[in-house]
Length: 392
Image (tube, rainbow, N blue to C red; front, top):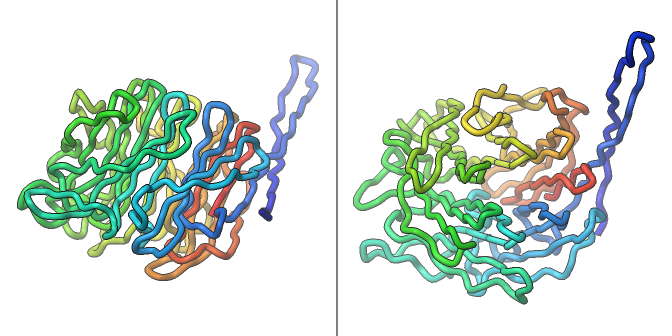
């Protein structure tokens, strides 16, 4: 597989004592730019405790295709042979770029995957009506294949913008989506629901609402979740309090305490669904979120447990055509933000990226590369050597 390597050289300077001696240390942060294996789209990647890069992606017909998993044991990004994730053929979809699969790594690097089922997937039944399922599967260590996927949607139907999942080192697994219960209709009545497992995904609770009254949820926009320290579940989604009030919201709380609150709001006045996605990543001691507003992508460091006062950052020179951000941070605190440009309904585009230091200062100009396919997304990870990989 051919890929492009970009290096950003930067230095830190130190004044030594009263003698006025200067010391400088310089290093080059390398960004490897790769295409998704096997001509796939919508890659999602994470790095395990041992440095293994885990990657999932979609292949096949956009309305009813399949999901695949591969990994690279080292930082050279040599992928192992892919294995299929979904056991029911054609059970996944890629239409809209918001409904695809998402990946989480749990205790002992158990692999967890969740996605919105296609029309070929076994339907969920809610109040006697068949609906799209919220599917989940996992891959146990030393297994030879993924378990058969199963539906976690019980009472909160109307699944549209896909779902997300998170897992942590204690064995928690959470799956979230937005929908509605009963006869409620319209985006203003939608809400975010979550279900949680405490045993690595063996059993899940009944889903419950975690978004406050009045937030709504933008029907065709994606959702993203992750665990922070202490079992705190963070969720990024687009609200729809009124038809023109579609702020990107961050929820934070602990599932079994039911104490979720909106801790960040990025307003956007728009009278239609922008079909946007968001990103979350966990750093050494803090989380980072990224989202789209009015065609620009933004990112923010969530400073710590209960502290969401960090400054909102953005890449240089907004051009109003940026979508689908991805974010990663390395052990030096550097942040790589990537996104797509020019993508839309049945339209591909290009990938763009910018590297920032730990204070949010850009370390390079924005770089771009053509070739994002229709329904394409980008993913970024920080490798164990503190360099980055960008896959699209």
